[in-house]
Length: 524
Image (cartoon, rainbow, N blue to C red; front, side):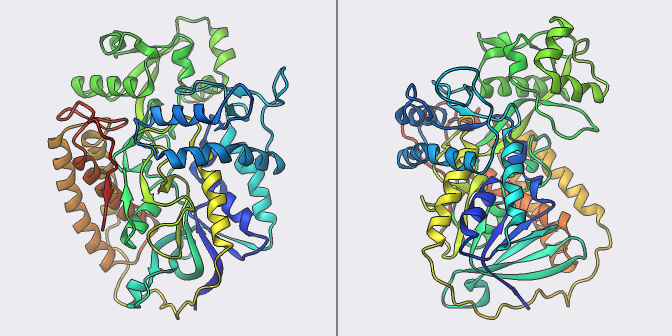
């Protein structure tokens, strides 16, 4: 029998938290999370939240900076709406107890920093771990609220829609979710369903994202009939620690800002051959340069060297990086840091409006899995957490205006014709194959030939996975692989449709930017 909620939120990052807390006084919430509550990408956010908070800054400036970063592909109406809502979002977080870093002086009580692409100091933060501090403050309130039921260790399998039930009214009625602790598939019904599942960084071999970022919401929304936009725009961070036995770890751009040099394995610098600003060139240029050198020379990584600075300077300025690398046997005061570019943020996703509504009635999407029109062809730093807050609140406001839905009897998950998998090594092999060819063929620099090769391999993998999915009982790994392959197809198809280089999408076959900025929209 189906469990019934007023609102079902799939995902537990900042967007999901914001939505749940704004609804909890009026609705019964089911909050589905694949692992523990705090395991999403929001907790990993180091920077901060962009907002116009002082008289020296303006809404127009924030809008302009975002549009420039987005290569003129951002929706102006969305930009203005988000920038105008930012101050209220920050005030709400302060009221929730988020301990933003205090200012040393001045009238404004909190310290504001400035990041690449911003013309003003407008980034409010909690030291260098803003996401974790925000999530920690909100998680305590989530767990304490009697109207919020946390379904941890559950992964959504697929959305339940009227079309799949053969109904004349096609709307979303809930989802099936696998309890990974006992392998039981549950039927979850709700008046409204919200996808807040994050991005798809794990589709690539190297990523700064947590293991949970497998494109689940994007794939489920697509399978349910929603349009998807701008999936070709994947943001890569240029310097992620390269280590076979370590989780992804960002090496801050501040290391280059303080004099760090990028070198080949033989010690040769290479950035001056790519840009006169060398190591201080913008993020996308540095990432492309590293990618070029790695592919040209067949390298596993390049090296970021700050050993020419005094050891005391390095340890004082980068204590966390120093300690983390030291734990892996790398003394960054004496040894260069092995680095690779890594997939960092998914700018596209399920198309939504200003109220976070998708094409499917009863279904919303918020956060990184949504394409709101805010980021365009390249996300401006510290706009991602802001987007979670603004659209989480917008979705809550719209949901509170909706009455209860008429939900039919939902069928239970049918496992009568499947058996236990005989060789689960197939999943691990396919996962590894997918991530490697996506890195090689659909990474920072693309060509028509590379994209065609990737799409061919994706089709073969999809056939194999579909056969496996229909024959064996589902597992967490199988579901994530199925979603990753679907998301990979959307990325490749979007990239093949864009015959220009714009923002994060760089094509050797189409190196110029067209005069008119157009979205890439895929319709199922």
